[in-house]
Image 1: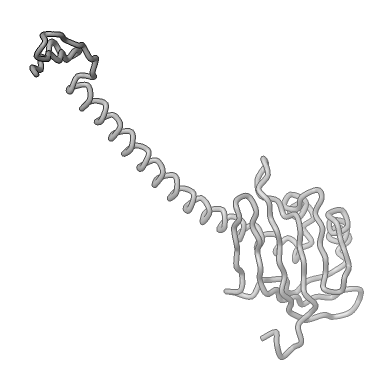
Image 2: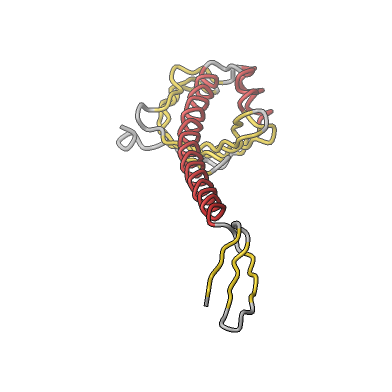
Length: 190
């Protein structure tokens, strides 16, 4: 058997009867280029995947910081009865469920703030208690809240746990749902 390579496009196989067959094969040089392109493609895909993964992680961490600050700003707006800021943060279909089973919507909370139904001395998260958990375009903030205020002519001073749920919308993060515990007994709230 005799192998004859003519150009780089054709291999002729000659057998003992002097018959030949032509078999089309990819030239070795192009094969290396193709492998090289495949290797390059693999490297590019790997780099893009690693970059995207780190950006997702960084983005998730950035989102958590953004939501944490937004929730802190919301608590400050409640303390100041700042209906405008509350209105910007709350989603239109917002709902709050308290530990006593009361359900409030956005309009009701905004109206309470405008009327200054509660005068707050304290409405702050306990330092170090806030935790933000991210699930894509949803964030849940939990924290221990200290409330000291005059409400309906009565002084109140208590702590409670809350969970606030935020959702990313085309216009930014919005507070969509809140749930608060009952006020904690004084011994447990320290």
